[in-house]
Length: 150
Image (tube, rainbow, N blue to C red):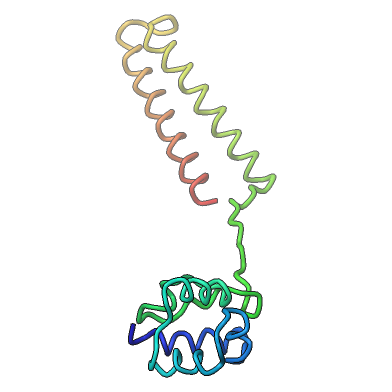
């Protein structure tokens, strides 16, 4: 409770309230508010809750030693809300991206046909399948790199 008086004084001043104003709002005399701020007296729990409501703060902000929260109330600077959006791809990047996806899809199709042996002999089908498979993986890596960079 040692920090209550200091926090009360600081929060009241930030709200541009006099001791008289605060006293009227919580139903005590100005002298009692002065005693609260000097540390001579401490309010009962119901009065402490009322003070927190009038000062638009948490009871915790009045009692604990940390600096009172500065974001409450209309008199204080407003918090800026920032919406983070993913940057849009340019037309050129979209064309490249779609082209790489198409190439990767063709590589999948090519590796499936090559590995089945329909176009090539049995010996060449394994080599062709590996070739198309490695091209497919390379094109997917390029797609991922471009997409992550944007």
